[in-house]
Length: 115
Length: 111
Image (cartoon, rainbow over all chains, first blue to last red; front, side, top):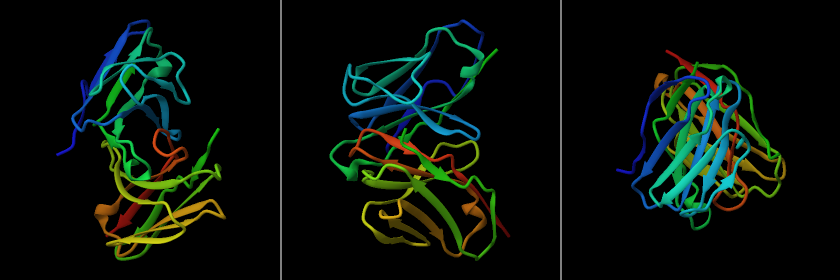
């Protein structure tokens, strides 16, 4: 069974704290993604990575950074959390090789609350 | 900005009816199109994808694509209460790395 695992389902942090969200996939996928999902705004891409140590900005990268040191692991970092980063964060992975590889496999999500 | 638009709903249909979900996209270069279902409190899961003009059927689900009109739809026949969820339309423009999502349509199937 394919699996994308996110390290924490629920987190509560204070403004200014550094936050790490980790994601691990066991499908040997090249591509990994971090989205945030907010009511009325849908899924918005923060960053994605198509290979180890490679990263590309998505639509809303401000306030976030990412790390991909191993193929199976993709971390999202909030250097200094702010209240407007309270959201559901979804990690996803996909294979490569044309349109057939287009299916995204999502983790269960990490609901972050910043107080 | 590549845009994908859906009616947010909520869309309510009686059990056994056909539910019709619509999506338009702005990038004419878009290559493949996906419908994800998301139950409340859960993560999205893929139910259909389509990349050629026309219809694609899978059980009770039919995806329809019209690239000239930049329009993709999902029909759910014989709707069941278990189909009640938010349906997300996603578009892939560059062959693998980026997916653009609509805001989703909330569907409720009334028993």
